[in-house]
Every structure is written in structure tokens, then in C-alpha cells.
Amino acid sequence: MKGVKVSDGYIDATGNVLDFSDQGFYKNDANGNPIMDWPLDWNDFRRGDEGTALIYVPIKGLKPLTHYRVLCQKPWHGKKGNGNFQNGALYWRTMKTDLDGELNSEFGSPTSDESSIPVIKAHFVVGSKKVAKKSSTVKVSKKGYVDVRKNKKVRTYTSTGKFSKHYVYGHHTYKLNRKKHIKGHGTCYKIYGKNQWIPAKYLDLR
Image (cartoon, rainbow, N blue to C red):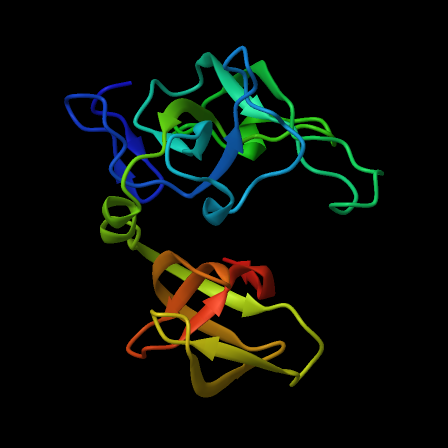
């Protein structure tokens, strides 16, 4: 896949993913396999922990109308903690590229219980958290619809996690240009031109 484009960037000549649409983290069991109970927050890990990162990369630049076998993840059903959910198990599936050579849900024709986004599975060992923090901000170009009841106020935060003293409102859409993990608030997106970060749990990304 070296040199192949992904959703917001590309895989460089050495195979490094320079940008991606989303990621999830899991701790590994004694055999080195990810424990797929529920995606974890980065703060759930400690120095020396071994885990698996799943990186979601809609892929472009392949041969049009061609079948590829790719690793995908099943969706999550139910809510964390109620014992009534299906975990996001990994599985291999065949997907067909569209006329532009992109793997996507339309040409992939997934069933109702399958994900259509290819996944890169990567093993990691937690080292210095200072290094992780330095590289944690990712450039994005998205719009975020605040998916709460109409005109409900949602707090926004600074890049250090403090209340910004500003709000966003339900059923409003905002232009977003950065993504990072903010301690205490999880994955957050920055409003373009402002130091206001919105927790991802309130957003429907478009």
C-alpha cells in the first residue's frame, strides 16, 4: 500500500500513515491479541502497557472496479457497561473499488452489521507520554453537526482542557480543522479560527 492515498493524507514511501480518519485503542491479552471489550481512552494506558491500535483509512488511488481483500471491523451495538452489546470484532472481507479507485461503502456493499472502512492493525508499547502529547494534534478538514437537542448549549474547551467560557449549540454545524485527545474530555475537534474544542461525543462529522 506504499504511496496509496487515504482520506486526509497518504501512506508515504516507507509505509507510514501520515493521516487517517479515526483510530481506536485496545489493551492486549497475554497472547498479544487485542481485548475487544470496548475502545479505550488513551488515559487508560500506563507506561509499559502493550496494546493494539486500529487505524481507519478510507483508501484511494487503487485500480478502479477491482476487488481487494481488506481487514475491517464490525460496528458496536448497545452501550458500554450494560452487558448488551456486540464487540467490534475484526474480520476480513472483499471490497470493490469505485470508478475512481476508492474503497467505500457504496461499492463495498456491506451488510447491515458490517463496517466498510479498511483498518490498519498496529501493535504498540506505551513509552513516554510526553512524546505522545507532542504528536497528538492532527489536521482535519471536516464539518461537525452538534447532535444534541436544538439550541442546547454544549461547553467547549481550550487545548489544555479548561472551559473556554464559550458554547456551541445543538443542530448547528461548525467548521473543524484540528483533532486531538484532551485529558478529561477524550477526542475533541477544534473550531476553525477559534481556541474552542468540542468533545467528539457531541458531534456528527460530515
